[in-house]
Image 1 (tube, one colour):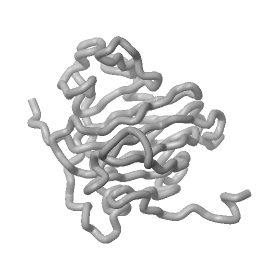
Image 2 (cartoon, rainbow, N blue to C red; image 1 turned 180 degrees about the vertical axis):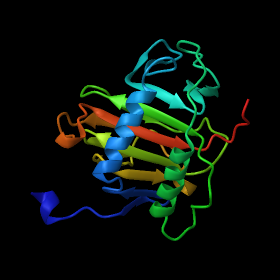
Image 3 (tube, rainbow, N blue to C red; image 1 turned 180 degrees about the horizontal axis):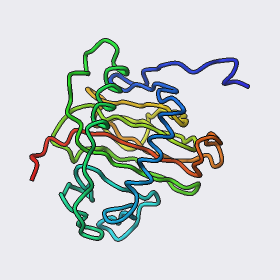
Amino acid sequence: MDAELFPRSRREIAPGAVHVPDWLSPGRQKELLEACRDWARPPAGLRTVRTPGGGTMTSRQVCLGWHWYPYGYASTVVDGDGAPVKKFPAWLGELGRRAARDAFADGTQAPPYEYDIALINFYDADARMGMHRDSDEKSDAPVVSLSLGDTCVFRFGTTGSRGRPYTDVELRSGDLFVFGGPARLAHHGVPRVHADTAPRELGLTGRLNITLRVSGLRSV
C-alpha cells in the first residue's frame, strides 16, 4: 500500500551513490535472467567462493571478463574448475554505460567507460553479504549494480569503516544502484533478503545481483 501511495523515485543516497528504482523493464529483466542462467552453467559456472580464512560466502558467484577471487582477478577460475573465464559481452558493457549515464544525469560521472567485468551473485533466502569495498580494480569508474528477483536490504556505508553511519536501501527486482566518485570505495553489503518477493512473472526464486565494473587491467 505504501508503495502505491508513494511511488519510488531516483534518490542520491550519498554523494556519488544513486538509486534508480524500476530501471529495468520486465522484459529486460527476463532477458537478463536467461543470460544469467546460461552464464551459470559449467565450465567456469556458478561457484561457492571460499575466503582465505577458510570460510565460505553464502551467496554463489559467476564472473565474466575477468574472474574475481579473494582478493584479485585472473583470466581463469583459479579457485574453481580452472576453466577460462567466460567472455564479457559487448551488449552488457553498453548496458553499464547507459546505467551510468542515467544515474548521473548531470554527466559528471558518465564518460564512455569501458565496462569489462561482471560479477553475478545469486542469493537464496539465507544468503548474506558482509560489509566490504570493491577495491580490487585498477580503475575508479563507477560500479553499476542491477537487481533481479527477491527484494533485499542493501546497506551502504562510508569509505572509512564497516560500521555506522550507513543507509539501508530496499532494492527490488529491476532496480539500479550506481556508486562512483567519492562513494566509489564505500563499504556496502546485503544483510537481508526477503524471500518470495520476486515478481511472479519473472520465474526466479531468490535474488540475482549483476555488478558491472571497469577492471583497468590489461587483457592477456
